[in-house]
Length: 473
Image 1 (tube, rainbow, N blue to C red):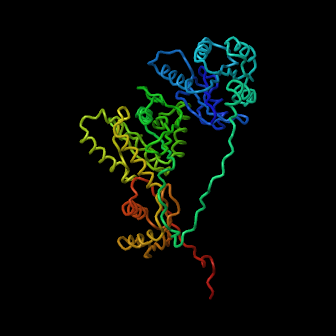
Image 2: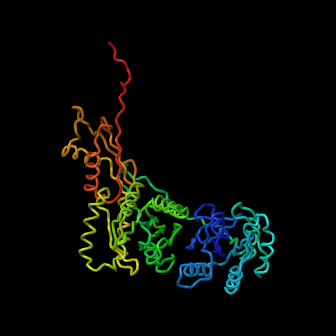
Image 3: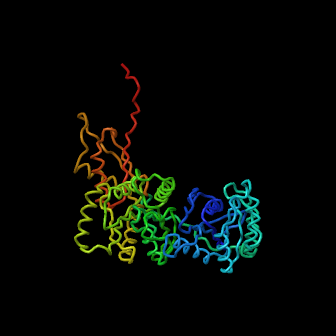
């Protein structure tokens, strides 16, 4: 991207709506309630042939520095300092307020280019608010409607004029022709060979858990900066915010999500939107870290979140946070291990790591567990090994006989990874009991070293070519 733009303004002027319009996706939560956005969210914007990085920010308000609104203001000011240009959004429908005047003065002191944007200009009676924007002394306002997409061409022209054509449209150098490696076919290669794990590809990780479990603090400790808003208040995070960083040369994209309470307690529309956003982050991620509060672990909601992650087919890792607040660590750790095995039988062998997001203790071990779990989640096993294993399993524990007829498991192959899924061709698949399926899954975990990840087994009966045909007499 050629430059960075921050969207700033007081609460409820349409900043997140404009952000979604520029990135072309509904990434940021939008609601009529003021102050929905709290963290700064980056995105890749495209506007009439113009490409740049856009940052959505919280509404700026005058507040004490230690309060939640004060910490939100600090995040927004950090985004302004990071950006090359600010889009100062005002509400043309409701007109200017003293807060708008104070914000204009703050932006002027920064000394960076500013584009004044008069949003909601399509509304009846917005002319007076539009002309009042001239009094801010930031130049001619650009009338737009972020909700309906009106005025986007004028906004593009205003951005180009403020940032300069050289920055807006950097010259593209012709790519030099380089030597291209053409893969050669190797003689004697095994088509069923198990592929090696690619430890260089970027990894998507979602951090989930109950409210106030320490998810944002954990990500800030990974990044080494106060990138996400934190505090003692529960439910600070609302949007699912993604951040990128490198761990031992590998790109990690982490998603901070809103805390998920029990469904019966989620009443407000805004919290429902936040939880839905967190569920989308789980489906988009590859590995999901479920953060437990080590002082009050294994609440009913914790178990439901783990079950949800496994049903979605994601690789799961448990992180027992706030370990710095535990006194008798050995006794607590033994108790946590016992409860993990007893309360999460569907996730046998799941990796659980005690950590402290506040001090950074145990984070390297947590990241190594994430990598190891992702390796298992991507694992593929050759068909030859699977069929030899299936034959051994049937010898040790034959399938049951139903109505006097023995069920035969004939053939097994892996149909997909992420998560590992297998297909077994057998007779009378509808009569095979669930207990035997669990026996096979546990055998796969033990014999092929596949702990913690969900394993799917599908059974398929061979079609009878003579079914439905009359017997000749």
